[in-house]
Every structure is written in C-alpha cells, then in structure tokens.
Length: 186
Image: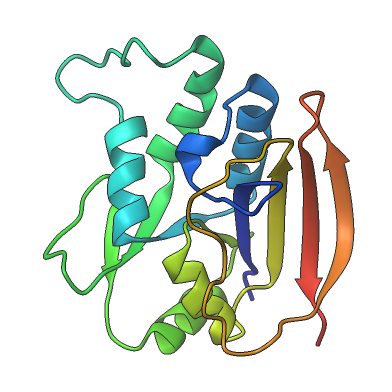
C-alpha cells in the first residue's frame, strides 16, 4: 500500500500562508526530494490552481517567469511533470497531468493508496484536514520557519479529535528552519 505523506511550511506562530514563508534554495531542494518520493500528488482545487499558476511550464514560450530563480527550476520541473489527482466538486475538468477525484473522499483516497508505488504526497490546508479526520495520512512533515507572521491561516483548525503523533526524524536547515516528520500513533 502506498503511504500518504503530508508536508507543509509553517511559521513559529503557526501561520501556513505561503506568502509568509521565505523561499530559499535548501527548502526548494528538500521539497524536490519529498516530491520524488511520490508517484503522484493529491491536491484540493485551491492548491492545484495556485501551484499550476506558479509552476506550470509556459506552453507557448517555454520560458519561466522572471521571478523564478535558477535554484527554483528543479522544483518547477519536478512538480510540472508529476501525476496529480485533484479533489474538487466545482471543477469540470483538469489538465496539467491531472485527474479529477470525485465521490466519497475516504473511498477514493483508499483506492489511490492501494495502488502499487512509492507513495502519494498531499499539500494544502483544507484537504489535509479532511484526510486527517479520516485517519488517512501516514506521515506528517512540518517545516517550521524561524519567523513570527502574526497572522494567517493555521493548520488543522476544527480538527474534531486529538491526533497523537510520534517524531520519526528531524532535519535542520542553514536558514534555521527545522523539518520534523511524524507518524500517527496507532
């Protein structure tokens, strides 16, 4: 069974707004390593559209936007090429190497997990909350940034029950960020 892994950047005060997180080369390299451990990505509509707008290879020109640093390009190529599943009841169609996931979320994700492979990778805030409620996430990674944002959305707001986690690894970056991986205590 393929494991479902979740990773997100957060600030010390719990903000998970991507605009509050400083981008750097080490974090992008780490994100590529995470994506390479998965056969496919699982996104909700909002994250799918946000990632597509930022990282999809421009079809007509093939030229990346000016804001994209050279060290960001491996991430862009990796996410651009990845198979994607999009959970949405509002989208009629998707492309960008993507397939819509409809129907019962728990059943659909269980089917995806039962396929052979290295794993699935989920991002975002709302979809991971629903998957955590269903007990479907096998590994959580929180990349804690040495920053206080003072605003923004936080993770797992509204979780109906406690979820106890066990620390399985920790990785410190030169920026002061720390990636901590956890597995649910069963």
